Length: 199
Ligand SMILES: [Zn+2]
Image 1: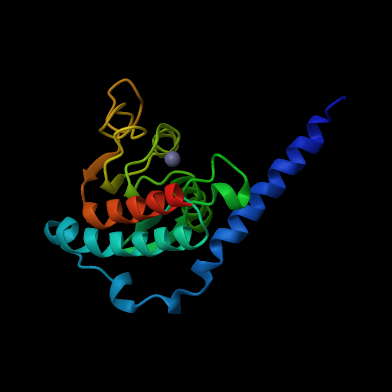
Image 2 (image 1 turned 45 degrees about the vertical axis):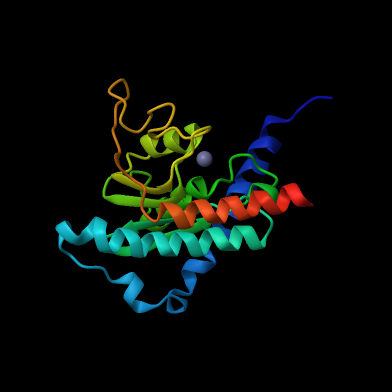
């Protein structure tokens, strides 16, 4: 069977526009979010202590949406100028797409929001240490910083196994903060996989 490359391109464009539309849904209703979680302290000193945890709670909300949809519960938000500009959860099963990790979706959303693929001044907050694919995408997007919750000893590529985000071989390094609300992030995953095993 011959494959028409143009139809593949069209299909890919459709998938991407679907992904963006799907993901921006939540962003179109900013009033759903509590104001106090959107406006963070400007002081850099308090950022990781206070805002880091508060943004992680938003990422955890996303992760719970994934769990409710029977997806591996990982959630992410992207923060830019003290505001959340993207929020996403893992949708691999729903989209039938191995690349539909929370981080990938959130990066796509953030770039669409800023109309710029370079996310140099943005911070991505995610409940689990990102995998090699997502870390690669973060480097490609020139992401400023990533904050993650629980380490992933098997698939993590930020600190646990590979270190893609702070790799001197690559042309961009992403600032990494690990272990924010790690226990809550871990528990969500443990409960999910325990339920799966007992099914
Ligand atoms: Zn990933």
